[in-house]
Length: 470
Image (cartoon, rainbow, N blue to C red; front, side, top):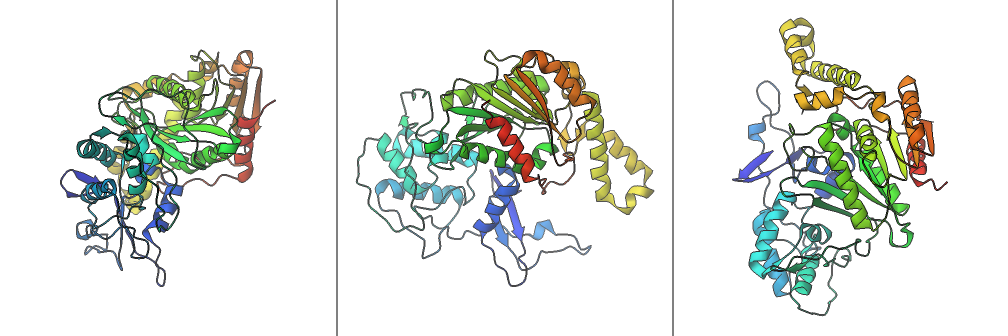
């Protein structure tokens, strides 16, 4: 994390390519976006011939150079702004992104834009053009060309769309959420016409408690008028499973589902500090996310999927819904809260011990200090007294009254825990079945940059359970 310009913090990655190889920044970012949550992808990448080292052979972080202000487009791909709106937008963005120039077809998020910068951009646009543009519109229209058309529509300016030379044809902007500064935009019952494979990041909820959502829209010709909410696990498990959730969301969208992924309050890119979350609040967040998904999709009911603690949150939330989910897919739900906390503690100690190598075995004080850490954190994620209390209270009896038309419990080890949960849920659903997974995944590991590889058959089974029309 660097702050070369006061108040403008950004995550910067440093890369030393293998000899004879020269990947582009976009190649690296595409790879990282497949492996990491969005907030862990560096905004800027710096290529080096060699990493600077200290006398002890460790990376000298103070000697790492700041990102240079290079052009966003190569000469052959650069398209200059043509209209007054494009010129003004380009000037605003050059100042915000600290680059020399921006072509009208450059994606601002590939150049380092993030949600905080977008908030500043919204303010600058309001000052320059006298209209208010909502955050989802900027995410849906991330180039100068698209933003300019959306802004011109909001201002009542009609201009012919002239073909320009660009590396790729830009999709038509979505301007339904743009309004004049004074009147508030009317709520819409369903999302505008989908763009194939399009994911819309947005924020929802009361001011100061906004949650981050990632909305996957179905392909235009395959909309089955169904939606699915995905509930993340906690902490390190959420990092470890990020790629799995993205794959499931994409597969469901391609199957015609409206899909919403979201971060709970105090996690990921949602509002709140990482010490403010607890099970009760996250259950409320899941219900709020479900309401938002139904509103955006226009669907009357939803299906839910959750992993580990996210599965338990989904189960608890289902009991409070006025309209029970059609399907409830629970993968390795946390059945015994005390056992889960003990598992997190063991994973924390194991992860910390790896970093100390030989010193770990010889330093009893170090081992005792790490053991004490487990009372307040798990692999870098805070465990407050309230969060521990709400987790400790979880037991098979917590699943009594879980409501859905069909429930599927997924797990590699279908022992007493899942069987007990099945028995507790039978009265509240038409069908409750156990599905054996091929892989027994250990989600609590200290591998921040490694996602678990899940067998394709397991993914297919999950998708089939969510798409089952029986």
